[in-house]
Image (cartoon, rainbow, N blue to C red; front, side, top):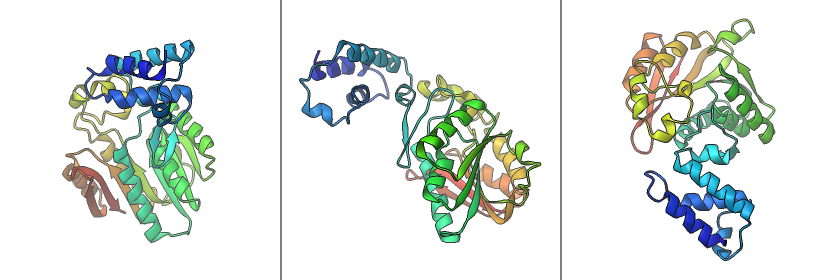
Amino acid sequence: MVVKDLLLEGVNELRLKKDINAQLEVRLILSYLLKVDKSYLYGHSDEEISLEISEKFRDIIALRKKGTPMAYILNEKEFMGMNLFVEEGVLIPRGDTEIIVEYIIEYINNIFGENPFSLLDIGIGSGAISLAIAKNFPNGNIIGIDFFEKPLKIAEKNRVSLELENVKFIKSNLFSSLNNNNFSNYFDIIVSNPPYIPEADIEELDADVRGFEPKEALSGGEDGLDFYRAISKDAKLYLKENGLLVYEIGYNQASSVESILSHYGYKCINAKNDLEDRNRLISAMK
């Protein structure tokens, strides 16, 4: 079978699936299997495809048809110019989270420049936030923490792949592993993209999210705010004076998280929307 016929077969399998761009995804899948850029396929539409590749292609199409996210199928997701390894058990990095990284990059440039600083990332997933900051700032001392083994394993795999020496990952239930390690008033910045979906809303998520991504990385408790309360309560113990706390938040959570931060005595509380004018991040200072 040649390239154009295999692609057409894939499109016919996926075209009725909601939220799937069949034309794009079949090209991504075949270029991944052939280890070529997808633009290569346009100029080689009559190239013969081996039986082995054809069978792998059909296997992947079947997985996609069942709803398996592309990032888990290809074991890769681009984030801030980095190709991160991902697999089931870690949250897939979102473009929305790049807004948080861009905000922190601007803050670091304005406040620290090339001077050293320390940053704590709570709930690392694939390591996206920690690694993006570490890559942009060799002068940074970055620590990422997570309670679960899979994110720690995947984040470390990505750290090694990116050859970053200024970030390390630690197993910790929120701040528990930091308590006896001289981290009091230590961090200039604490950032977290915590689980923030209200428990009752989990079943309303897209099927490929609720069916495949880890629930522990999604559910923020009954009202979605459990982690904002827990982190805000204790973060001041680990932030330096005037240190920055930054959260990613859900589309309607700004006022609730602002109230939590105000309750725990933070100052300079600032909400920022994304390009679609939805709540996306909140920052505050100790």
